[in-house]
Image (cartoon, rainbow over the protein chains, first blue to last red):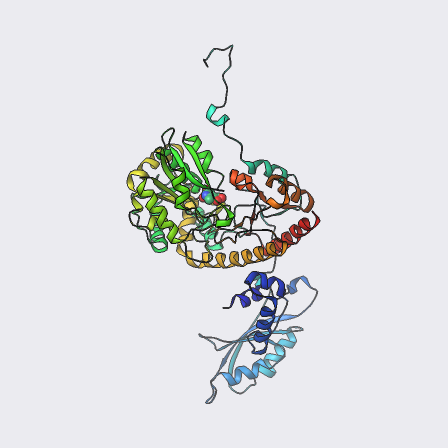
Length: 159
Length: 393
Ligand SMILES: Cc1ncc(COP(=O)(O)O)c(C=O)c1O
């Protein structure tokens, strides 16, 4: 992957000035490259990684395994895209193995998730079955640990 | 005469040690240690923690009961792994049974190498500025250190001409350290070939300290030991401290012809017995995934290097772009103070620790060593502070 994308993946807030220094390019080149990535859709957005456990929100997240029948035209795509449109659905992945789609669904409470599954998801033509697991506590998200621990103190000067 | 006469108490500390100066780094360390909130560019070790799979492997080994001695030469499986790694990475073939010894860091390997080879009065050539241990280790073995100053204008390269100037009939050893601590210098293959020819002509032995070999940013590192006819007269020292961020594990190894390993082994066996078993288990794990671990660190360091150099350029601080290791060695001669004064002032005014170049030999005076193996956040803040410090002078 392009080094620029590698850096932005770990810190999307890195300034063009610093990026330019790290990559030995001019700020203008960096800005143009980022604009290009945004335009052609390689960069699809920027988000903060939040530890919701530390907040007083009562959202629940469910991880749902879905079995579906592939359709004659479009295979799994058609249903997957349809499911992706729901705003409570955060992520959708096509999987190999015992089920086909893996969804991450977030909603206000358990009841809402339950009704999403029974009324919206399960009723889609082609969905054969669902298995819903509720997420209890995040430890690591997007490569970032959700709890920081004290750093082991290092020497300040050494040969 | 110094006798055991009770009226004339003898000096407690051996004379040879008396004459050995304290490391300049230790004085500076004492000052830094007394301060809080210092951002340090002064450490000769990676800012990363050791990759998790390596730490995990040593915990597992501990649980399994790896708590005893190992063979003097080190665990055979580790020597085999080192042999395979050196062959693959540097194209040099060493027999794990008789040409490799596992040591407590390159530090011990260097000490063993010098003690195994040096007779009193033998001269040891090395390029300077250099790692702080070289001269003291030579002197502790009653050898004569012969530093060869290198210059920023040449990117701290070592040339055959410089060597020819210093070589005498007493010269026995040449120590090479590329990429170099503290300058980040590397040596192009062509220069290495010239040096190899020089070594053969004068019948010298080379000790090559390859501890930064993996951290070469532009060209893959080439070892002098891989040149025709050189393996027989080379001691290849390597370790896990830098490229694997394992300084605290204290693990290294030496590869050399059997006769030399046997001699080093004699000292090692009676003074160290063996390297710690947990560190050996960790190092074995480190070699299982060497490429991925190292590529990740090298890529990160390269960006940090670029960032530091671009920042120095903006400050008009002259430097030679480091091609390897993780240090920049900018020149502060225009500021009309010694490197020690500069480092102390910078510490006092902006709480940034750098190492005075004079710690790395007389030819390091006028420079400061700045490590870019810190976190990017620290590096950014340090650059802001150094720029402010320079602007206020
Ligand atoms: C050039 C050089 N050689 C050797 C060493 C010592 O390394 P080790 O941790 O393997 O003893 C260092 C550490 O800073 C170094 O920079």
